[in-house]
Length: 220
Image (cartoon, rainbow, N blue to C red; front, side, top):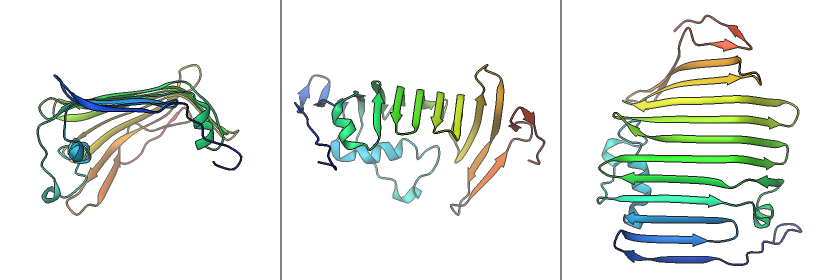
């Protein structure tokens, strides 16, 4: 119970077992359906996720990397527009089904995707949030799209994209925001490089900066 909201769940099912493809864990409830299936060791999943980033952008010292057993699994989740969510999240109004799907393999890398058509929480309204990420050509590529975002009367973003690649402890990124007519309104690109002493150097691409339709010249 939160304030006057009571969390009510009609049914929660949790199944776990083994089959010809490996292990599986399935969760079914009013709010979310999720499934983890394939070859994996449950106690090593956190290390698998850390190690999926580590070769491209260090998130921990190399001496602290934990070796894991071979794995090949799929993780998926579907979040539904449920009254139970309103009881958990203050100001929640609307949510169209959010879909997340991923595949992790110790030999073939990993991929992940997210699709969130509608999220309304208080004064914040999100439309068409998408994400595609994964390993390709010895780097991580990330593409994030946002159709429309409004936060009260002060912030409104249309047709926003954030693209990036991670490799050799460097993030190359490009942020672009268009107006409703799909004309470039803001744009910025650059790199974020991690140094050996865990400091970071941010550099902007000189010819990439666009502020409210106006090109700006900056030093590298």
